[in-house]
Amino acid sequence: MTAKSRTGSSLTGWEQLQLLCLLLTDSEPTSYIERINSTDSWPTLVDLASSHQCLPALAAKLNACAHLSCAPETTPASLNGLGRQVAVRTMSIYAQALRLAETLNKAEITPIFLKGTATLLSSKAADFAARDQADIDVVVEPANLRAACEQLVEAGYRFTTTRPNDNKGNVTTHRDIERALKESRYHHHLPPMTHPKATALVELHRYHLPAGFDQAGILEDLLNTAATHTAGDIRFRVPSFEHRAIHLILGSFVHDGYAATCRVPIRPALDYIQLMSEAAADNTKIDNASVAQTCGIRGEQFFYSLKWLFEVEAPMSFTEAKANALTERLIKARYNNARTATYLDTLGRVRHLGKKMLVSPGKLTGYIRNNLKG
Image (cartoon, helix red, strand yellow):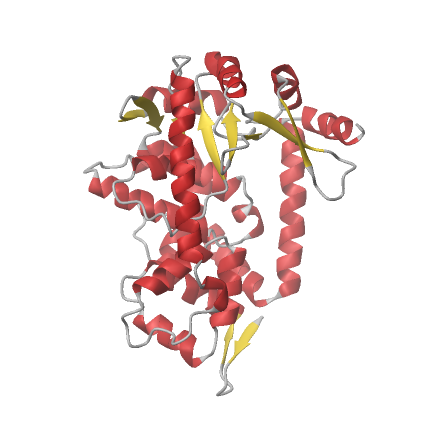
């Protein structure tokens, strides 16, 4: 897991990770680019960025650095035209989200957009080329869930399902709301919805956090504190900055397994840094104490990673010195040794599945039943 240069020097996997984190977030990236150039590390760095779903951010950074004398003479092939592709798709998703809100408004429902869509619709200076978005996440008042389904189905959206016996992963669709509600009863969102004229899938959420967290309590506070925005006659809402931070930590850093497998949360970190920038532009002070209290030890792990790897000022004091030191050692080992990475991934997966079976045992029977169909 090293990148060798023409001069014989090399970067370990851990050193490549450090360079990528700092390159993406430092306003003065010259020294990092020079070191990458001198070790011919661009191919491995691009692969690393791709595995962490931050390739568009890397492309945007290099585009912003094009005027520097140290900028690479030849942009890595996988980055050519990437910014334009991502920007076009993101603008299409922006328009789709507004149409979706307009559709729900017809039923007197004001949707709350989550994650990347919330940033996209509310940011005063969103960079459409810097972040690829897979889908549109939206939550509505629990009492409006069925009405929201009915409105979207009437507008042409369909629930998706992948047949278990179809190895090609071909997706079939249906408009049966009862079926969708029943099949997803152990999940925090309904089956993804698709539309023949839409760019992205839509995930309609019961809760914005997975099982295992205080779903109802945190959702109630999110609903009470979300801010209303308008685009012409279209109404939609976005969570408070505090809840967007909580979602990043519990919904991304924890649920997506970064904490369990000792992977560096590059994409969640970039999202958090963007969130801080938005709050500053809005003259809003984030209540980091409430964020830390809600997220507990996982919040400390996330903020420690930000300080240690991205040199971002931490919004809290750290109390778990031994745990944080162990995390450092495991992360370094993970990125320097493929076997360690495989072991941590396997262990993290086992722990994740075990926890899910404890907090939502119905998922196991539901999984078995769905895979025996057809």
